[in-house]
Amino acid sequence: MRYLAVTVLLFTSAWWPAGAEAQGRGDATGMSRQIGTGGGTLASFEGRTINLAEDWEEARACLVWRQEGVLECFASAEALDAREAQLSRRRGATAPSVSASLVPTSGAPTAAVAAYAYSCSSSLRLYDDNWYGGRRLSFWDRGFWQNLGDYGFNDRASSYIVGGCFAYLAEHADGGGWWYPGPTYPYAGEPVMYSDWQDTISSVYVG
Image (cartoon, rainbow, N blue to C red; front, side):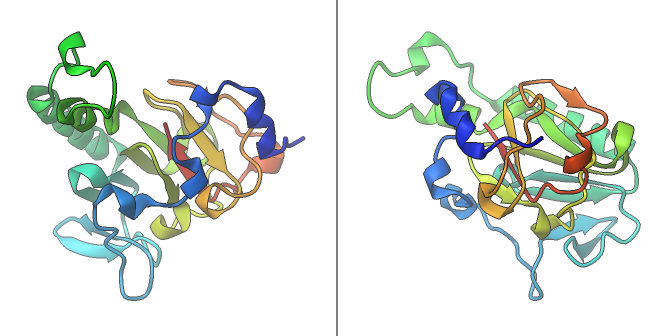
C-alpha cells in the first residue's frame, strides 16, 4: 500500500528535499539541460550523440552528472563503473577538504563548501529489471528533481541502489504524486521494488 507524500512531513525537516517547494528547478544550478530538438536529453555514446528520450541504441548504462558537465552512456555497466571511478578520483584530487575553517558560523556556505557539496560520494543507481539487471541510469547530482522521461527511463525502474546521500523516488514528474515508501537512505538497496511500484517512478531527487 502506498503512502501519501505528505506523510514525509512527519519526519524532521532535515529529511525534506531542499528546495522542494520549487520542484524541477534543475536549471537553477546553472548547468545546461542539453535538451534535444524533439525533447529528451542528449548524451555522448561511443563517439556520437544520442537522444536518451528517443533511443538508447546499444547503450546499457548511462551516467548523469550535470554539475560536472557529464552526460555519457556506455555499452556495459562495467564501463560506466570505470568512468565513475575516474571522475571520482579526479574530483577527489581537486575538491577542497571540508574542514571547520571552511564552514561559516553564519550566512551562506563558502564557495569551497558549495563546490564540494553539490554531489554525493557515490551515485543513485536505477535499474529497469529486478535484481539490478537490465539497463542502468546513474545520478550524481543533488539538490533538485530530475525527470526520468528526459532520459528515456520514465516508468521503467524495477530496482535501485542508493548512493552516499538520501534519495526520493516520485510517482510523477517534478516530485509529484506518491513517493516510494521503501528504504531510500544512503547505501540502501531494493532488488525488487514493491509490486505496485514496479515501473512507476517518474522523477528522482538526491539529497
